[in-house]
Length: 265
Image (cartoon, rainbow, N blue to C red; front, side, top):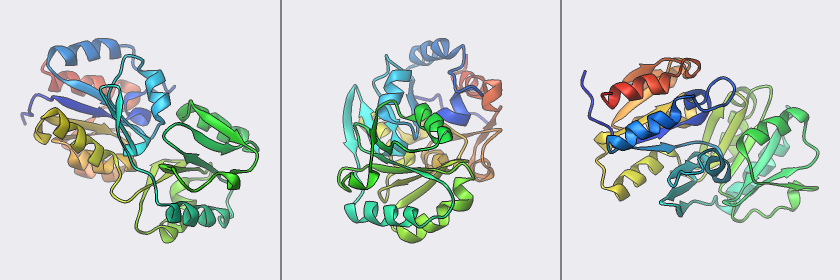
């Protein structure tokens, strides 16, 4: 099958672009140059914080951060979608009733609020995704306003232990399992797919000329929205079901392999 030459490519990070050690592939700089030469923009699209993505890609100006809750284009934040205060309150009450050990991260556009007394495992995970962190003595003292995402870390498994009680608490909002140990709550209609469509519209790029790479459930809407959907070999089965292309695993530099083919290099 022949695919359109991509003009906009959204790249999930963990389990997709990044290798097993959480590092960018060695040929990523070359890949960026190849894409630019073909008139194609590569856009990081992640559950990670905007500050974290900007640190990872210091020359980057366009990002989909916090699973679509924050969109930056041309170095300016063009959209941020806060949760309703009632949603934040309900989700916080629901997490307080969960018996399995977990850690709540309250995300604003500028920082992530986390209680100081978290486990070492939680600190390690938080450090991966949140460069700007405000450690607080009492998370309950953080207001419900201006929260764009609630992230919940559960070492025992986010899908098994966190998903159901949170969905029951905030059924009208977007609850996404973003990894084996992470779950995110965003406002209704806020997800990576909507953000990709917005960026394509602003750039005057037909959605058919977009590509999305992903591996987990928080990438589902993005793959469904893109002109060409690429799931990694290591992806969740639900992503593979809707993918146009199955790329080699992130540990085998699958993004580079497929993107070079799509760019006809």
